[in-house]
Image 1 (cartoon, rainbow, N blue to C red):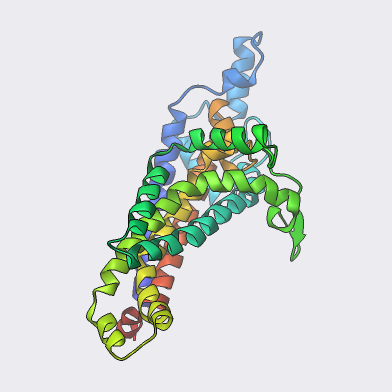
Image 2: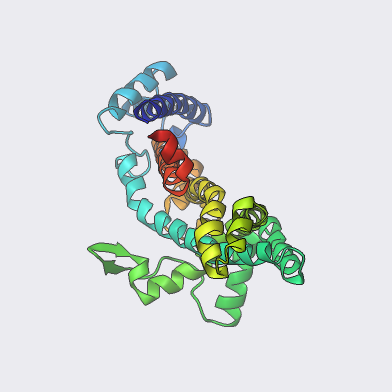
Length: 323
């Protein structure tokens, strides 16, 4: 087990280094941020002075080595636009993005797993066709279109929910979060639902396929022959085995919820990392873009570790193999 962990850490380190090289070189090949930071009336001498102050006059390899040296000390650069550490700007936006991602993940699980179980247990019924047909909507509907439609329906026409912003967060165990206030939850409903629709469809399909496969296994038939009740059979024998692929998918999809919530955050003016990265790309704020990519990669790698650990918890065969 320790060898596997060390191997995964080594692989993660290699991926992190390669990603930092690609991100740094790629963003430095796009545009010149100096012309966005100086007045249009600035002379060429003033432009060159700003370029020297930002270190953009150095060759890209030398800029990268300076970046790595600072990153090893916890400094991912200073924003050209805000004049503040890029990592600090991103960490300020992380709570809002995590709130949105956790809310979307919760909706995906709470809605997708029961519907998938129902569809899998009624393999040849009209219920399955209705559920699986509905899941196609989640796969095909674009997030931006769904978000605008929800705003039009629930905000403009009905006036039930706010159309954007994070709202006033409350305090929960010393943390400021939208989950702890009514206003925060009202602002969270529409963006979370928009972000979760595609994930709900994935969970439904995975759960339905897993349920149909597990119900045909010999150990389920044997449990039925012994007179195990339907509820006990479902919770003891079916659901744990169905959840193994769902946990894997949701672990990876949670990382995507964080990394690719850009569209949802833009539509609903949600003050998270996604909106920050869009603004930074438009303004060619290179340190913020590179820092965002590296932070997102670290989140992905951490989630992969958690998924591997949950695998061992859910699958007793892996525990026996580990021993």
